[in-house]
Every structure is written in C-alpha cells, then in structure tokens.
Picture (cartoon, rainbow, N blue to C red):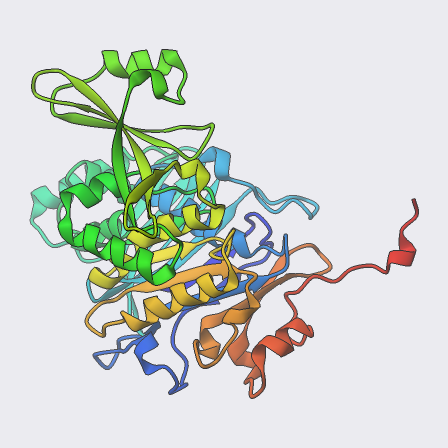
Length: 440
C-alpha cells in the first residue's frame, strides 16, 4: 500500500510535491482503512481519488510512480524522463520517493536521477516515529558510494554485498542488481522489490488485459467471477471466449502471421493483439506441432437463449475498458494488491465508474492490504456517502505552470461536495476566457 509519494522536477512538478494516503482522524467509512496494529504502525487508506482539470498534472502523479517502479525493477527509463521545463535555469536532477507497506513492514524508497542515470538511491524501513537505513547510495563522476544499515550475515555475505554495490552501473538501481545477483543479508530489499514487481500494478488508458478468455479457460473460479461481474455491470456481454478461426480470416499482416507460425513451439501459446481493431488472437501449438488459431470474442444472448459471438471491435469503448478492469476487481477481492488507474472514467458512463468503486468497497477485508488509487473527472464520485474526505485530492497548476496538490480533508467539508467542486470551491476545475476575447 502506498502511504505517500513525493515528486520534484519531473513532468509538471517543479518543487517537491507530496500526496498522502495516510488515514486521517475521520471515523467515517472505517472499512476503507488498513488500521495500525502496533504502536508505531501507520494507518493507510485503501482508496484514493485524484481530481483536476485537463493538463493539471493529475496523470503525472501516476506517471511519476510508474517511472520509479521502472527504475526500481531495472534502470532509468530515459524516454520517460521529462524534467520541469518552465523555469530558468533548468534543473536536470529529478527526484521521486514513495513510502509503502509490504508484508506488514513500512518502507521508504527513493531516487534522484538525470537522463544519464542515478545520482542518489535509498531504502529505509520506517514507522510512525523512526527511520532505519537499509542502504543509501551516492553516485559521482568517478564514485559509487554506499552506506548500509544492519546486514544479517557473516563476512562472506558482507563481501558479496560490497561486490554487488561496487559493480552496480550508474543507470541501474541497486535494488534490482541485488535481487538479480542473489544478494543476501538485506531481506528488506527482497520485500521492497517483490512489492514493486508483484503488488504494484499501474493501468493507463491504453493498457489492455489481452488474455481474459484463456485465463477463464484455465481457472474456473476466474471464469465464474468474470461472468458474475459482466452480469453486475449489465453491458449485454454474458461471457468472453476464444473462437477458433482460419488463418485466412485474421486481421493481421501476412508477414506477421507467417513469422508466428514459423516460430511456433509445441505446447506453447502466443498472444497477439491486432493494432487495427480490438481483436486478440491466440496461436496455440499442440504436442504434435499443429497450430490452432483462436480469436477472443464477446458472447451475447438472444431472447430465445441462443448465444451469438461478437467481434471485440463491435463492442463499445466503455465495454472494452470495463473488460480491462474485471481482472483487477477479481485480484483486489482475492489478494493484497495495489492498483493505480489513470482516467478510470475514460469512455465509461458515470454510473459505471460509481458501480466499480461500490463493488471494490463492498469487497474490502481487514485481512487484505488492498488499495485502489485513480485519477478522474467524474464529479459524481464526490459523494461522502461513498468516500472519505481524506481519500480525495485536487490538482491544479499555479501561475508558474507547476502542479500543486490539495486534500479535500483540508476544507473540512460539510456540504454537497460535488456541488462545491463544480462551483470551483476547491479549485482543480478548468477556467475559460470570455468568448468575447476571441480575436478571429
């Protein structure tokens, strides 16, 4: 679970800017909070909703966390690095840090970096009162200086850690190098890396879950849950299945099809998404080397009960988007996962966004540390009967072009929050020049 995230000099963030999902003192919707179990533990919100006008920077919060995840799991993604540009002189060093809960431990992991690589990197185990260093790193032109906290192991273990640290490239994180080289003595690194890789999941508007039908074939419980959710959201789709197709009927370039068939291996399945429509194909090769091709289809029912397969391209954008969310909802109900969704309301009816959150909240369990954080324009979600005030954040740009964040809890709202938001009481809405100012 994410406790806090702070960003500096990246995308639309100039000065260090923080967003927090640490629970406030409110007693409403207590089930939305993962409560502190020990004296020094921290209570964390299980949801977060981020509002802002177009180009306010709300998506940049999720983009920044995605950059940090990429760095933690490997190296600095040069193509994703965009320092704040509206200042002189421009600062080339950016910073991201998140505090998070993993396996009942709390950590702070952060990096300072440029296009060329990492400048500083650190991991601390934290609680409400103290910080305990796991490692910290400072990279200079000719140096790669490390400091370590307590190492669990003998001299050989310490020598291994020194070797890994000294040979970690400037462009790569020590977090990933330690795991890749089977480091020992710093179990907190394994916990943090596993959380970054397995528990933290980020969905952008273009993200697609391609294999929902094949997973349903292999997992009966997943198939049952999928059908149940399709019925709950009432899109007209009753199931998602794979339908066998001929090679000649594929909406894929012939060269790609021929390459896929030539590379086919026994007892393996290749999943291919068509760029021209929303189709997903499965090239499945059996033990005899015969490749069958299947196409993912949406199943509808006629009034007489007969089933009719529809092309995915025949479904609405909202239905396609919803299919990307169904595996997420199943995961959140069964596992301790953290999902960040950029533009949860994209292509969806306002009621669908609300029902999605209602379903998530209905599945909350105090035994699971799940979290759902999203950006949205959908004002109907601003309902204190549905959410807590400390779960809501507003993003807007100042005169310097930099994004700033404000929590709804700071306003101590006792009114119709949606109405107040649309009236501009909390900022984070678009403002327009008078039409009379137009010169053409």
